[in-house]
Length: 249
Ligand SMILES: NC(=O)c1ccc[n+]([C@@H]2O[C@H](COP(=O)([O-])OP(=O)(O)OC[C@H]3O[C@@H](n4cnc5c(N)ncnc54)[C@H](OP(=O)(O)O)[C@@H]3O)[C@@H](O)[C@H]2O)c1
Image (tube, rainbow, N blue to C red; front, side):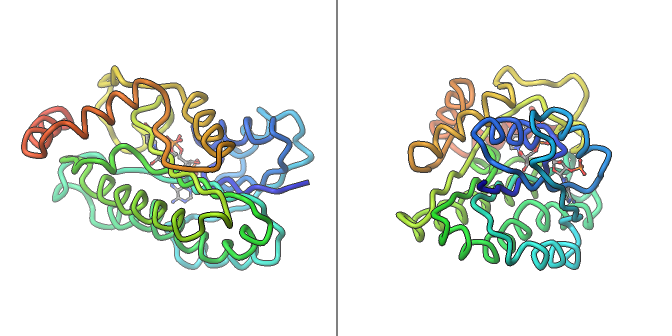
């Protein structure tokens, strides 16, 4: 049975990836930090005995390297670089360690994981899904580090996709807002939802459809596609001022 590693399998998109990849017949390596939370993911699956857990705080270089050491030699078919979080608020008001951790978890760890696992994924003619964000498409005041890191993720993932065309299918997934744990973890203002919000199930389903058609840059659902179009058409000086007032607490 082909095995897929899903990072951040204890959160919104991660749980959905686990459910939908299991339905496609994969065995899963479910990554997280917290066994109790990962067990909740396992409870949502049809064949819990088929899957196993791996643990690492991806903000820790040592734990990321230990995770990679434990994975090398495993015959993986797919990698879903999904774990991530943001820090919402004024850049200088927020701790620098938290902002550096956004870089470590959302960009550095996926790069390290991919570098270690690509030879095996390519050998198996497998796949990689990199969960980026529409935050990558425009600088975001009050989510400055997160948007910069996701821009890095999109550029990196798209470049890897071109480098390995024909060897491995790569999806760069760029969702907009979705009702997961993301807003609470990032410290977003309560009750300030988005009219562009799209369910996690739809987001993940779109990325797996993109994978089935060979990979690519995937903006899921019509609401996120509309948001992407607005981002593309709006001059930066306007979007900066709009986003600064929209995202300010
Ligand atoms: N929801 C959105 O609106 C949205 C939009 C665009 C992109 N995204 C991206 O989607 C991905 C998944 O996020 P989500 O929306 O599903 O949020 P979520 O529900 O908060 O899930 C985030 C996942 O990442 C894991 N994680 C966070 N920090 C970690 C760390 N230091 N080490 C290891 N794992 C860590 C969490 O594990 P714990 O359970 O241990 O905390 C959890 O499994 C992220 O990359 C996010 O940037 C989200």
